[in-house]
Length: 253
Ligand code: FPP
Image (tube, rainbow, N blue to C red; front, side, top):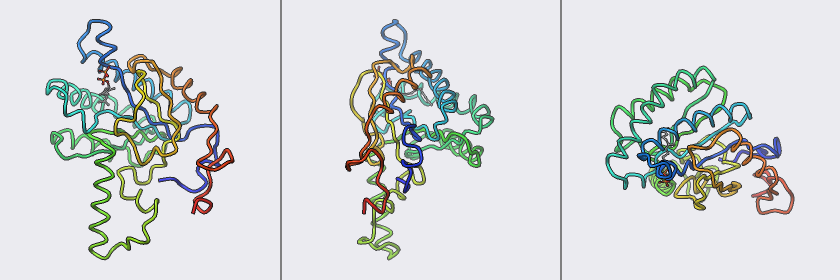
């Protein structure tokens, strides 16, 4: 969802940062360690990044923790990633809550172990009234799947007579996405040197500034986040127009 005037109000700091946390496996391989160790260090990097995001007054931080395509990994690694999510939610939830973080999960809950689905709901319920950083965890998430689900829901609403297809606009469509109510990312970071989006926030990142960094995710920290934000600040965001600011929705119409 792109809110009217969102960029005029704070043109030089990103309100929403999204991160593809890549390179855990390579970090471990370089040290002769099992991949799980890379993922464990990845959770530590996540903790550092959340604290840095709060200090930098970022309003929304979205992280790609488990993609719809990660099911193609060996069962043991999938089990490890689920285990780390359990630990992250159980151990860190109280601390996140104390820091006024609002936790939200995007992605499909179908196919997830029941205890994980329950944990996600628990974390969202506990923190739903918090007004600090919104931490959006993309878990079992794929952008194409998200867009397809929205298209299906829209078609069903139209068939019921609840929605007039000809009147559907971008904002109306975005309200059917998992990210409904969350502004679009301003800055999208991918670590590890890979330069692709890998089915992450494809609709929402239409005008995000992309920053690809060579650092492997377990080595990411507040300084790396600050450096990505400096790069973001140096960019000239024109949103298809000529001026360095976002047009309002009215202007875009
Ligand atoms: C990419 O590294 C990372 C992932 C697939 C998972 C990201 C997960 C974490 C940072 C830890 C878990 C966090 C939570 C909240 C559960 P990769 O394995 O693709 O690395 P590689 O490309 O070097 O092999």
